[in-house]
Amino acid sequence: MLVSYFKLQLIMFCRKLRGFGMNPVIGIMLLIAAFVGLSVYLFSKTEFAAHILALLALILVSKLSERTRNDFLKLSFNNRAYRKLRLIENSSAALPFIAVLCARQSFAAAVILMFLALLMATVSFRSNFHLTVPTPFYRKPFEFTVGFRKTWFLFLLAYFLTFMALSVSNFNLGILALLLIFLTILSFYSAPENEFYVWSFSDTPRGFLLRKVRTALWYATLSAAPIFVSLAVFFFNQIEMLLLFQSAGYIYLVAMVLGKYAAYPREMSLPQGIVLGISLMFPPILIVVIPMFYLQSVRRLSDILV
Amino acid sequence: MIKIENVSKFYGSHQVLKDVNLNFMDGRVYGIVGENGSGKTTLFRCIAGLEKYHGNITTHFDKLKNHLGFLMTEPFFFSKITGREYLQLLANARTIKLSDVDERNIFELPLHQYASTYSTGMKKKLALLAILLQPNDCYILDEPYNGVDIQSNILITQIIHRLRELGKTVVISSHIFSTLRDTCDEIHLLHQGRIIQTAGREHFDQLEARMKASTTGNKIEKLKLG
Image 1 (cartoon, chains in turn orange, blue):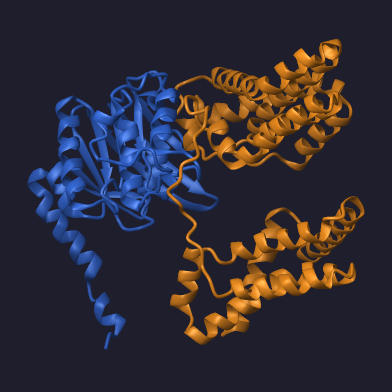
Image 2 (cartoon, helix red, strand yellow):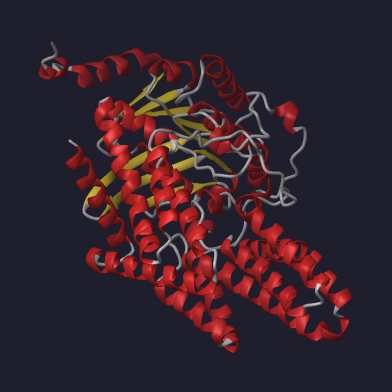
């Protein structure tokens, strides 16, 4: 019974990889390589790597304790099978992390992680707390409204970094905070929305895109304002550099919004992603990329909006 | 008015709609019934312009979609958007100012909560409320009674009556015949992508009997229960 369950999980995982256009064997090898590579990188960068890795493992394991999923499993399997299944699932999810921790001789962290992972197999979490995170972006849903609620801690981190930059008179740290805000905002436009949310607009593709870009720029300005204003006041002699980064943030934001709709209703394609990636290293290419994305977006949206 | 002429729809080689011809007039309520997979939702998506099709769908509006409120079978909600923000989003989409939301929240929905945490019926009511707050002339309601409590059921029926009085065009699909009997002026039976029967009020009984006969048959015996 359990064997067929785990077989099914593997089949579903392979289907997901194929969905990304990847051969499952190559995909799994790449994932292992990426995991090992990132772990090694983490250990080379910080002395807290073991703690961070254990925390990441626990976050992953906690996802398996989601209530609806566990209710389904409880209904589908008898008690004994359910317990066994959860123990196998949690230990399997934690195992790669435990292996890395052991390889780095962080045995205490590995043991604690294994213990907590097994302990978490006995609980299920309710996922829908009725706590609504307040947002300043409620007037023009949805990208910033939803995005802010998912990443509010990154906003706090960016403002904290700005405070630190001012405290230690480090302009570069302030710029890092500005970049963090813009990167966070760019992520709000990474996935396409359900077509109903485009269809509902009584607008032309051009008007729709203008609306989206206008909202993005306005809310980005509001989000970055505490950082921009603080840096402008405290590091006025570097205002040109500050303006350069702020403008770059705006330009990439426009490219991202247009890039999203250039592929709509699908996710941004690999070539489009590569083009955006190249533009990060060679910004002048945006002079071609932005109009190209704009024309593609208009074409894509005209199927739904006209 | 919405005029549907010879509309066909293919998914690959599979034909979902076959030469559908229908007229939806102002101030009338139409029902579309049919088994799962008969093509109801596809037909609605074609009318809304969400699917490409063969044939013609014409109307006296410049763009039908700008006058159409479309309640989907399973409305989609973002994970971190409140009920109030959802209403705001759909109002913004039609460039209208949202006012008296609390007063107009006749389904008494907890608008401050994330819509994704709502029950199936509450989600349906929120999506319905959103399109009712828009100034639409036509409404497509794909299973509006699905998962909705009995009180709201009554309210939705009253709303449909009011829309008819206001001269709006309403097209509903439902698997509960009694709800269509209470609301519709005309019901079309869709079977395997083709309209096989149209019944006015006076022939609803006949239509229901036909559906019962074709649906039930001796299927229960085939199940070999017990």
